[in-house]
Image (cartoon, helix red, strand yellow):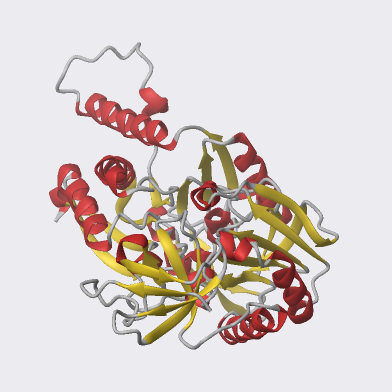
Length: 457
């Protein structure tokens, strides 16, 4: 087998569990490996370190698949790995019928993503080494998972860095465009052909469930309280308003919620399931809102959700501007032209604001601009949170490191005159495990903050 010999002066990342070998770390290559071939990785003394597949066109020249010698990545090799992947998901995901089955490097299969949507699997082959094993991968997936269909979504630009064309289409069996799956007791319709990435983002599954405590406990703000009332000779507790009348609306204790960057409306669905009174579901994409609306109707939540197609940055700014204008008029200490309509109808505020934007920093050079973007949405988002309410905010940009993300939010809080209490700090879910030492896997940051005003403390 051909060998890749590493530089003596390199950092010992491979020994610490990092699966990538960069071109700059390679001293020489013995043999004549073709792009995509398996090679042995040796240190400068000739000691074996790992087996991986080789692509001289990529800056990541070798991607490790094992720390033992591997001669062939055949059907049996992939079937054994897939069995391990399935065992992990069955342990931690339980009875759910949708999850990430294979998560690339974290499942010791770099360059391969497999998502399960009920009886259909969606595959991404991101590297030349995995692209060459397409038939073996499909065959092994059929053996282990017995799906009705396998669909390829290798239509991502990272393939071009490997010298590969973008591809999508059916690899096996029958693949309907839309598949309905379950998550945390909810029904979700997924578009596997045109949805983002593979069709759905599983990495926030546990994070979406974590908002449950935020969705109830708000009735007292409207003057509603449970009181013991006699009915049919028995005492029962019912919600009663300030006027002493019984409140019959079942979600009287629920939160008002704004979800920005909603995509398929996953946080909106969870908010409704956990008792929210009213949810505003916002995305700039008409297609995304159509998908969210369909999912809301699928779960019977349509009476509690309003949909907005708008740019989240502009929407948040307009709501804040409207609230400021309304506050100025209420003060009455300045002459104001009351014939002029208020921006955004005077603005609105919510008990819970959820911000789950796409990655603002896809490269290291984009971090500075990303900081401005994250500060902007969080600054305006927290201004729209009712006093003592909650800001739920996330970043899926790897280059936006956790400390920088928190510092950016803190800067926003200072400018907004807010004090934030961190209630919860989370990462990606259990079907997205992380290899210790592989910082690239620590991409998702998810935080829940209680929002308080300095002027009220």
